[in-house]
Image (cartoon, rainbow, N blue to C red; front, side):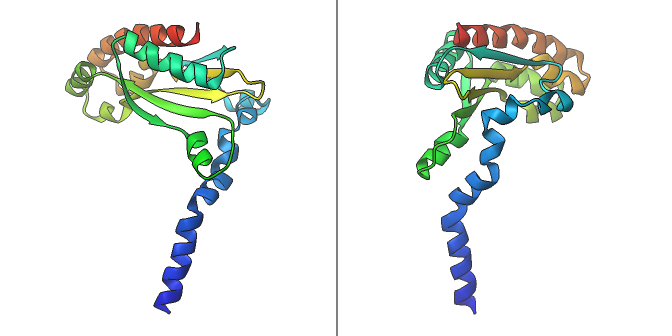
Length: 173
């Protein structure tokens, strides 16, 4: 009986990448983000910037990385469902979430609000469109930190708005 239980668990764990893509593959489909249903869902919502580009997904990824560095910020995290799917031998449209922040902003944020720490790093989202172009999306830091009702966070977020705008422009031009 124990053997059977571990056998089933082993099968599930071996199959996890496939289940993940099956369960979440449609979530990252660009057609989902470009559908008419978007208007009904209020997407993009207030404080979100969506920049369509003529760049390929790889070019936008490379240019975003360079722009983050040029604007003296840190690339803190990077996660890609399309990269994970590729490792499982499955091809889905490119997408990546890139977390960006810097330690001096982290210290200021935490001084103003410990609960706001969950918001860092602030993310850029890159998606590949069906025509081979790509889209860069991010929430303005002022929108990210607004719910915390902190004057100090508001000041910092306005500074970050300018930096994130410069990063986005540098990546998409």
